Image 1 (cartoon, rainbow, N blue to C red):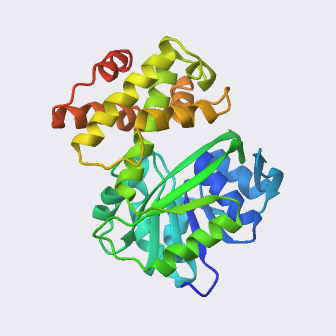
Image 2 (image 1 turned 90 degrees about the vertical axis):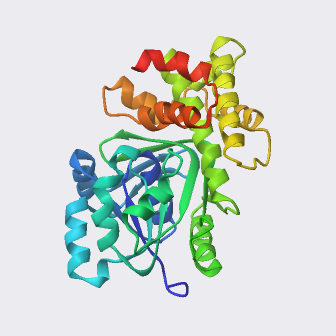
Length: 314
């Protein structure tokens, strides 16, 4: 697997998956995209359009299929099996791609979930016990800006991935993926504690998305002193308390870290949950808000800021 050119399958070609796919394709990697609806039709007809602060303007011819099409193809022929599957769907759609993962995997395939919700890797591993599932998280502002169009904003594109303690995967495989990502212009890091790193991302994106949605503001408002920033800090403090109770060993103060990341974002940026709610689409409010409250309750942690904002979304 490691010596030959790796075949990548991107399950979910939205803002995150589309950015990963486009950056990989730009550097000549073998990439196939899973998408649906008008977004898929446009990608097939016109290619994947990338508007990127890091890479500029590009139109990329990529292989693109529906989940059902690719599941059928991979069931019929080993040629469609992927070496690396990036799972970039929203948390509420994970169950719908279980069969795809099973069919599109061979014995050495690694699955790397890149979701905002903590615990996704172990959740997918339970659904596909015969496949090697890692875990991961991403720091990027990327979104679907039109049919077949992805916009990547700002200078941050950082992907962190690794194996949970009970998952066996060769260092060689992890490094082969890292090499491909770095050659593509993605800052790729192999985590020595992916449980910690996915919790840290969950803490950040939860505070960002919930604050933005509660006040209906872009991140520029969180970057200024005042009640919006105070809410973001309160949410960060509460998730940090939960992390400590779960014995997560943070490398640095999580509140300071969250503020550092938020202050680097483009002021006009918003979280995908916020965009989805504004459009009346299904959103990750369960995983980013109510799951945090439930986890805190389970551990006996008080989360008054989370409870305050939750009143708006019940």
